[in-house]
Length: 364
Image 1 (cartoon, rainbow, N blue to C red):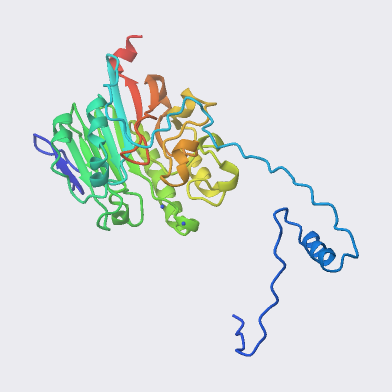
Image 2 (image 1 turned 135 degrees about the horizontal axis):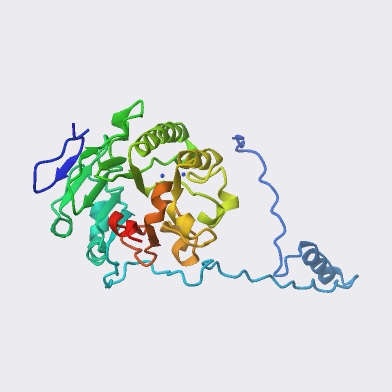
């Protein structure tokens, strides 16, 4: 049974973040001597004493110390764009022949992202499949740009209205089956709006908006439950067909994926030993983070920068949106690209993965 809303011209397929009481008569405390411009309280006191009795000489003035000027925080990668709004125009991106392009983007709310220019990216990216996460909608919106760009779509909201939410839009063949929950989770309904799985002829495509461990890690138990259930599910599918898993994974793979790794370690959701180990267990020896394979030593390449504290300008970000593939499928991956300039419609930017078509790959 389909647990999401599908848009397709033909019949739908089979559905399988963070006293002492003072007495009124009590004497007030003595005021502290105020510091002079040089900050030397004793020097000030001695100066006042010498002026009143003339019996002693004033001590020499304290030496001024030069304070170090802190260098402004800058991106690790000087080529990193620092725009805080989506560019007014986006040129159409290139795509080679015989390439299937899949993209994922956390839009941080469909309504807000639309107002900030989301459609400019949609129209510039020749994606064959697009995963939108954190849509915050409960049903498919009446969006002519999306409808004219993609032939098929599945939208799924969460149990909590205006929270989470995910959509997958694509062209080409209809999906053989569609699943909108995590079947291996003990509470499947709680996973609604977090995952959509499409089955195609030669592969499964999973889009996820993985749960966040929460402020002060208060939702870590829920994150662990998800990770364990998803690991089982991921490997079950891989035993049948190759898998492409993309979306907001809400975890960093290693220290290169987060700017302030030391200060955040085991304190911030997405960068804890529990979560990183859980992610690596999901990958095991069957899956690879395609970006890491192609860019193993890359630093300063992030997909999320918070809106506060000028994080974008300073290059303080996280790479938590990613594309994972079955190891045997990696040989067909021609590129993984972070659309770093597409910032402003959301605090995340899109990520794209290009796969050579099966027939094209076989002929090489």
